[in-house]
Length: 589
Image (tube, rainbow, N blue to C red):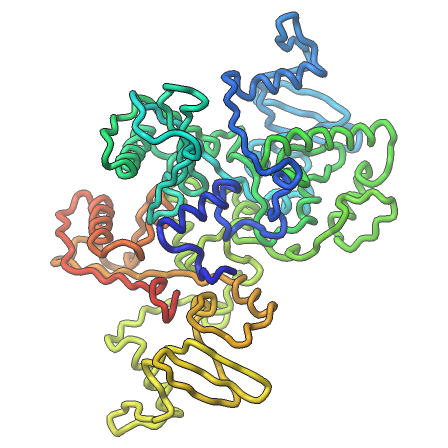
């Protein structure tokens, strides 16, 4: 709502925006639910301060302390309770009305009356654990509608300190044209004097890209960034680097859950609801604190209390499988037992999901395709059509695409050298006056006029342009792009109504760039079925080009082309055409 059509644009604006949102949610604001995250209950309930755990023992000490409250321990505090089975990988959970059987990877079998599943959301979205019978459709849908975000803290050790320190200097930001590219840095001299360690945080697509490459490449990228941040310092090579890989770890498959746009409290009720004798817990089931460690801890307590109440008191509601099934299948079911899953059900968004959610359902891909080849194919399937990834594209409103159902599946490339201009002139000639050569010569058509203000009332409309021209009309048809409407190029007086402004800002103005590159000779294959060829990279969609010079774009393209055709003598490109719709104030598309 801050008149930023596609979010912040400059490198500085982008890194500040990244620090404000992605650093907290691990995903960009365009995919994060406003209703369910702002204000964050963690901050409203516990305060705004963030604390870094500097205890050398790490979280292990917390785990042992909590476990010691209900498991047997020896004199040294080591857990020796025979009920605790470590290094067991659960692969199958079979459940019925009489009990649950759990099978592990080493073929061990465990019987129980009830089971509490605390696996991460990423694991539940994968095929690591098979449920028999399959979980009901409402449960599966809820699991796949939430995001398992990726949050990576990379620690880099240097032989000496070269960065500033002191009060107010714990963080420093790197402004790049690539959003999220090694942007958030922290130093630890106060906590660990002379440690000479920097921490850089990356998230989301950058996390997935970095996890797929060797640490040596990550280290080289980091060194380039650090030296550009401190050009006047003698920056030594890093001596060590630690790169966590939560997304690649099959026991986590991400860092923590994030609440996406279009997913309501109702779906979250479904996510945390039990299925028969199988109960679910974890940070993703926390009603107020999903994504946080305290959310996991408190959700565990809540889930355990619900289960205990069900077993000991045999109360209705959540303990009754038929009740839960009916409750989940029908949002408007009247709760006669008084056992509400949530104080309020929010039905909005129940009927829609992102295309990524559909992918998860169909292909068991927790966060979409992972390998470079899968990403390239996925990009060609969705982004090439919608200009945005499946995670932000509505399934209900795009699949199937009316354009294809109404006009057929064929896509045609306009090869007419006159371009779209000839189409515009042909259409305009049907209602505007033209001369004998076909040129529009109608005095009513005003070209090269930039509208800056539209004043409207019950009696008429006044339009003012940048050159101070004024035009009066009974009515006005505004055909400006959505990007322009989301910007401050045109001022409406009075301001548009709240419902109109909200509608304008809720839609995305995508950016689609076709770059034309000319070579002195052809070196690529041709023939039937060879119109397209895909480049598989660990970086989905590869790069954004609108903020860099054409020479840099050209250099990057040459590197890609030569890697695609390593056996060919690829000449330097002689020319390049890079459209910049997004930077154009008249289109912002």
